[in-house]
Length: 217
Image 1 (cartoon, rainbow, N blue to C red):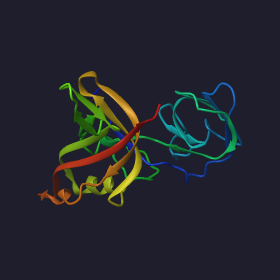
Image 2 (tube, rainbow, N blue to C red; image 1 turned 135 degrees about the horizontal axis):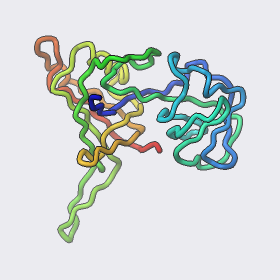
Image 3 (spheres, helix red, strand yellow; image 1 turned 30 degrees about the vertical axis):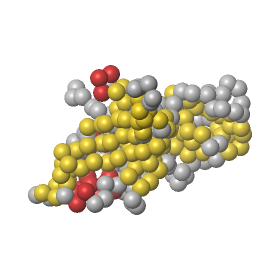
């Protein structure tokens, strides 16, 4: 089986006809639904919810560990407090190698985009200290770098950030030597004007930048 880089991107999916409301009581890692269809519903048209999707409820985002039934989801990390009767949304992180337009409710089974090189920076600023040491400050950032992308895939990526920037969700490599990936809320910055470099119908040396990364667990 060929290696897959698992770099992925998503927007929230709040407009897919989700039914019911959700609550958390005890334990705090169990999301309970009323009038929901977590296991048998198909909010992503071709597939029910699954481990690795992101659920949004009560102002918090959590990775799904398992979908236990139509009315129960277990998340990786506890919610911070109990709540009840709230609406919810989901995001499915789609691998960039199977790139589709944001919001497209279809499944792509053939790789149509080269995987970018993921560059992760664990802080946004570095300051020199009086003792000669250095310290990093601020939230992490990341870049996805392609030697080239086709116009078609450039346009697909653009649907995730229709303006100059947009809040969305990514899965990206943290430490290349450890093959470690994390899921983050991030602000995607569209590479204007450098993305206009073109040769033979391809965008050359294409970069997508993500700032203000907040990890979702």
